[in-house]
Structures are given as C-alpha cells and as structure tokens.
Length: 510
Image (tube, rainbow, N blue to C red; front, side, top):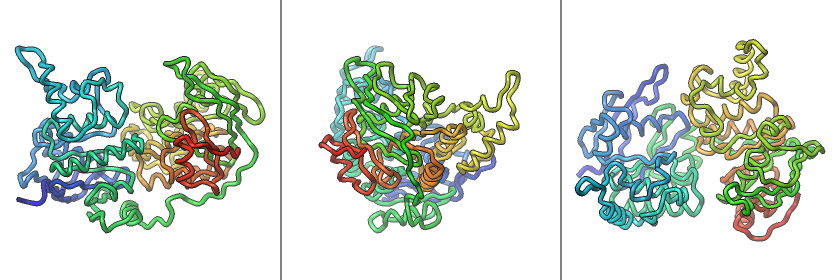
C-alpha cells in the first residue's frame, strides 16, 4: 500500500488578477499529522477549499490522488463521501440543539417516519467513546465551552467516517487546558489511523503535535520538512523569505505623564445582576506607553475593555479620568468623544462590515470628516484612506475591493486604520494579532511602537505571553475579574504572570 493517503500534484488556482496557488505539490502520509503554515495570503485556505470540495474539480489545474485514485470532488458532499472533512476556525453548531443532534444533523436515524432518538444517542455515545471525546452526549451546545464545542465538530466529522481531518486554526480561541485536551485527542486520532492536516499561526504547536510541516509562501511550496529536526526560526525564515532576528521590534518609547486613570471600576454581569465581572480595578496609563493586560480565558480582560469603552453594561461604578478630568462614559460615542477607541477581539463580527469595501470600512467612523449637509467629499475621503492604508501597509488591489478579499492580517490593519484617523488619546487593542501570521504580526508591532513613540497611550490585551512580555512597558494581570498585580517589564516573567493569573497573591506596582 502507498505510504501516502493524499498526493497533491502541481495544483494551481487562479482568481481575477491573482494566482492563489502555483504548481503546489505535497504528499500527506497515511495516519500522520501534517502541518501547513504560511503567512496570510500564502494559499493555505485556497488549498484546503480545493480538498474540501468548495472549489470543485475543473476549477483548478493539477491533480489530487486519494489512495492513489484521482479525486474528483464536484461539491462539499463529495469530499465528505471521500472521507475528507474540515473543522473550521469559526464553529458551525446550532446552540439550542444537543451534542447528538448536532453530530447527526441531516443524517438522523429514522424509524417509521420519525427520528429514532434512542439510536441517535446510542450512536453518539459510541463515536465519543471510540475517540475518547469527553463530552456529555445530551448536553446543549450553548452549555459547552469553546473547547468542547470543537470536540463536537471533530466528532461530527468522524461520524461521517472521515479519514482525513483538516483543522483550521483549532487553538485560536482555546485556553491552555483546552489546548492540552485537543492535543490528546489528536494523538488518539493518530493512533486510530486518522490522518490530520493541521493549520496554525502558532508555530510552537507544529513541534508539539505534527510529524511533518509544509511551508507555503505566495501560493508556492517553499519546503516540506520533518518537525523533529527543525526549529521556530527556520519556519519563520521560510514563511517570510528572510531571517527574522527578532520577533518583537525594539521600540524607543518614552512613557510620560498619566493620560488615563481608572479608579475602583466595577461592572456587573448583564445576565446576573448580583455577579461582579469587573471587581474594583484601578490602574493608570501613560502617554507613550504600551500597557499589557494578561490573564486566562474568562479573567475579565475583554469585559474591562468594553466597560472602559462604554459598551459592556449599565450597572457600573468607579471613575475614568482623562488628563485629570473625570469623564462620563455610557456608550461608545462617549468614549470616542473623549479620545478612547477600541479595536475589538472579534474583528469580523464587531470590527468590520463584511458587505462593504475596504474604503468604506476605514472611513465609516470618520465620515463626518468628509461630509457636509449636502454631500461627501469623495476625493478627500479617498486621499485620507489611501494615506492610512499605505502607512499601515495594507496589501490590496484597490480600496474599492470588498473587505473579504483581504487576508486576516490585512483585515486587522483596516480595523486599526479606521480608528487611527481621529488620532485617539488611548487606543485599546483586544487580541490585536490573533489568527494572523508572523510577518503581519511584526508589522503591527512596529506600528504600535510608532504610535506610542508619538505619544499615544496603548492598552494591549493578549493571550500570548511572549507577545505580552515582548511589547509591554508594564503588565496588568487579571484573574476572575480582579487585578492581581501590575508588573514593570523588567520584573515580569512568564512564570510570575501565570502565578498571578491563576489566583496567587501579587504585588501592585502602579
């Protein structure tokens, strides 16, 4: 039997004005875990869509062999019939239905014209047991955390006899505990003979779980290597086409006077009026400073950001002071009027209007700058947006193109650009580099440094400790809605941050 379950031979894919894939050849070993990495726009998603049947046979050049037989997918259903399934970064489950109902949705066992729920749940228990998936089979999806929801997606694929499982950024929204659980599951799948294709921007994960990794750049294969004999620096060099001597650019920041002070900020859960989500938090942010906010999932970091931005809830107490004056923030408009802007964690759901162009997304919050009673000055709007897009190195064919035509990293640059047009005093960045490649991350880091050097105060929320340590002047660590400590950069280590983030007593150096 051929060692390769999947052979991709000289595959090319053309879009209007763009060659997304150029002569790509990759061999995937049977029963292994094969990594796929590259910068945004390298061609990873296009290749996976070909394998999953989104782009049918005939819509691309080249040949794909499955078990030495030519693959002829006409649509997604063909790929599933051929045993190829994909677990997307954005999970597609129905929250008010149970685990079993989601796994067998559209394929429910039927007896005498009605769904046989006894068999549905028996089959669900069998598939969960076979692959050691720790999920309550009758629980509603809405009651599960993101990690377990992802397990449901994996179980759904395996229930359709998937022999090749594609995982697209599977850990982007998981806690460390959930990531560890996913790694155990992937090892179990490997033992059961399931072949996995693993896509991630977290390069260290390739060395933890994959056997081999293929690097794509500009739609072409750079190389396929065994992970056992490689390192992170080698992967980065292959991805970006050059050696990166530093992951975090050296800034020349000079934090000055306090521009914002938060005193005793408390916010209550919108669903439970007696539950405090933010508990008596106080801190300051200085001009020209990057203040990092660290903590585990559920620590209250995003709730803190949205409370300061006036969009979390109404039961709030405490003070927000800008340049020595107490301000009232009951809405995003109040925050913006006082120079506080937020780049949200969910860039597609909250930061972009996906039906509009790049130009419209940048200009929308600033439309008053270009409009009069009777008209919008289109020339001025285009000039300003082009300047910002150039400053942020947004890579696009035209600002008139739809925002969905951009890679994730370039979409994030657009979200940041639209808020920079009004020159905020305080810029809050919630997970600014989540789901984007190492090259785009570096560009965003450089721009953050430039903004801070110009005197802007930046609050950066991140789940990546190297990013927190590499970019912050001071670090506020949260646990269960409380500030457990504020560390100077020189005093901070991953071990100290994790000790505070898990609830140990800390010191407050503000």
